[in-house]
Amino acid sequence: MSLTTNYLGLVLRNPIVASSSPLSHSMDSIRRLEDAGASAVVMYSLFEEQITFESSYVDHYLRSGTNSFAEALSFFPEMDQYNVGPDEYLNLIRRAKESVDIPVIGSLNGVSAGGWINYAGLIEDAGADALELNVYYVPTNLDLAGQEVENIYVEMLRSVKKSVTIPLAMKLSPYFSSLGNIAKRLVDEGANGLVLFNRFYQPDLDLETLQVAPRLVLSNSNELRLPLRWVAILYGRLLADLAITTGVHTSEDVLKGLMAGAKVTMMASELLQNGVRRIKEILGEIESWMEEREYASVAQMIGSMSQQHCAEPAAFERANYMKTLDSYRPVN
Image (tube, rainbow, N blue to C red; front, side, top):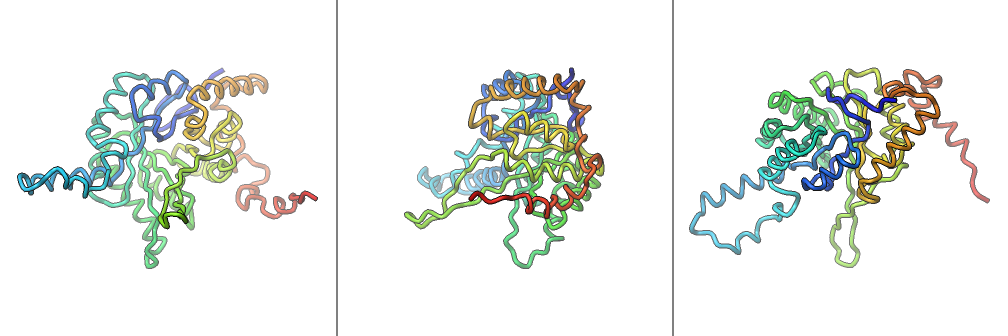
């Protein structure tokens, strides 16, 4: 029985990848992910704001020099306490490549076409096996048309592709008016993979302090349905690898993702909640499931329940809307 899969041109020993999260903040944690059975690790994101902050910081002291004083540091946002700076990030990738045998995938998060894109090449130089581009953008300009928003993603991809030769995956949100079309445009532009979906963390309002408060809510298995549906629709219609990265918590979630058409399923919330040991447990459950049903390999099941192979394609296209509503029976 083979759990091997291929993603972004990389041969992975199984379909469970540790997605971008605080679990990749240290070498010790990255080693533990490998020991637990993760087939690859996506580094936590290096943010555009971190890079531009560091550039502004250096420029400030080159200009001010002796006129500056220590207290002035308090006027800068505390970006140095959010993850680590660009140099530390690159050094961590180098050390990871020297210390673990699984692929290390870099992650860049931004939205503008600024100089931070050059860090894609630096991440490649540091030894990353691939790069995940996470365009985290919430368009609040009421005059910005949907086509213009999509063009931002395409231009970002185009710019990054000029900087690297390693495989590149685009991490998308589901909030496009025509998700299939933007997916096709990105693949046509050179994306080697699509990661579905980014989770936009919604702010809350604190009624005591009357301030906007960040609230980190981890995913659950119910959130798998949206990426599952779109992976099943896109499978076989795009020349790119597909990954699911929301709502993957159990062996059933992994199997569903594979059968929909994902080459890999990416896991973070489950590992943060219950520990990295869950990877080994889930892999064992997958092997038992495959043995009971006489599956020889993971490759055999990938896409087997996609829209292409579904006897009822409308179940994916309209999510079997009327039948789903009709099936509900209220509790008396």
